[in-house]
Image 1 (tube, rainbow, N blue to C red):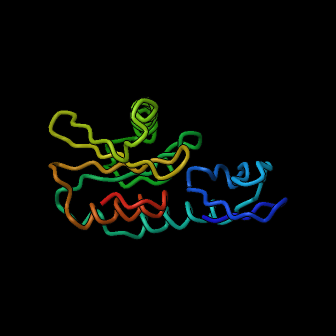
Image 2: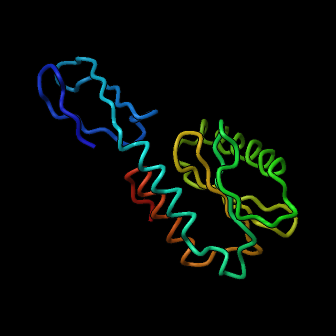
Length: 164
């Protein structure tokens, strides 16, 4: 995203990582003036992403057991998992696996996705934004091509990066 300095008008190119909680705070590359912009689109991008996930027919694939969207502060936002898993189960799973993901990310900042094998199930964890994680639980790997394409497009939308 491009932002112009309030002081000198110089062009500053910022990534999605520089926008946090709907604000872009940055130091101008030319005059070093500290700028702060409110970015209302940052919040709506997450809402668009949630709606896209909810409308996507993931459960039509026989390999997919279920999906859920987890927010670090709000807990499980969407639940398309089997009924045997309660909301409390998803909270525990989301908490531990998102913390594990963030711990790995602190040492290896280029991590974009984590895959975990538990028993005969495979859990794919994709970070969509600050404190927002998407979980896909499947019977086998690799994931179906349609789901891989969805995860890649979510990564591109969130970060503005091309990981393919």
